[in-house]
Length: 178
Image 1: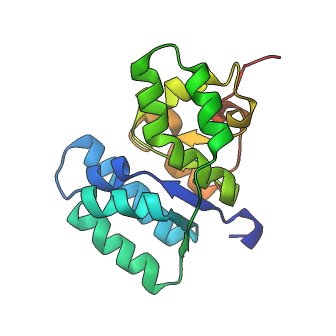
Image 2: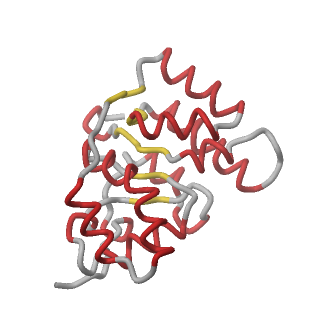
């Protein structure tokens, strides 16, 4: 693969936790997603907050995968401060306390994605939908790419093979007009 097409991916603990060895469809899809990341030469963007989540939630398979990624030098670890402005805008954009909590719980994914200019891979469609709704007023969310390895419609394996590009329909702000 062309090195310019290699991306640093922010892979949520929801994917790491689902990527077990069972024959459950979500488990298989997450396992295939992680294996494709390993083979296609993408990197893992690993903020301190994300690493803490992985420590609590990753399956045994995902922990072995992380070790393989680390051994190959494909883990980009970094410390990030919370983006106070982004979090304030998210708080104001939330339509309910539940939405506000959901977005603030996953704001570290957005912050990491913006830091590395890479996509988020998460199985949490509730969070994705909350962030999508917030793009009407939070411009900083619009260009963030968010995919769900468990959603067949996202075709994430094909997307990874193609360089994990920021296709417009994968962006949180797709279809939002000023």
